[in-house]
Image (cartoon, rainbow, N blue to C red; front, side, top):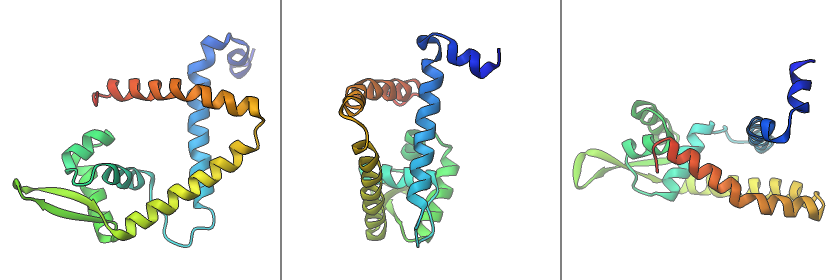
Length: 161
């Protein structure tokens, strides 16, 4: 039996972790691709968007804290910060309590870009969810609490508790 066939014929509990991870990755990849379609501005890489979203949710965050939250090395976040500062999306301010530390804030351009991205993403996903029948939409609604718990568990395991 082919590995794919064997995997599909196994019980649901045996394939659930793999199928769930594969499906979530595929959905995320497709959303990113669809959101890039028709863009007239240079696209932001995934890590750049993640950093901007983090700064949006935690204005004034420092580079070390951002690195921990994103599970990246501090020097990688510093590189992202430098790129986003040059692109006009981030402001790096000196921390008044520690002149050696930087505090990050979004620029107005970044706020507009993120708002547009979030609106387009909600429209895209909303359009496709609305095409599902009510049973499937309810199944997605019902799965959200479990998916939130799964994300929290992964987050805690990564040491961000």
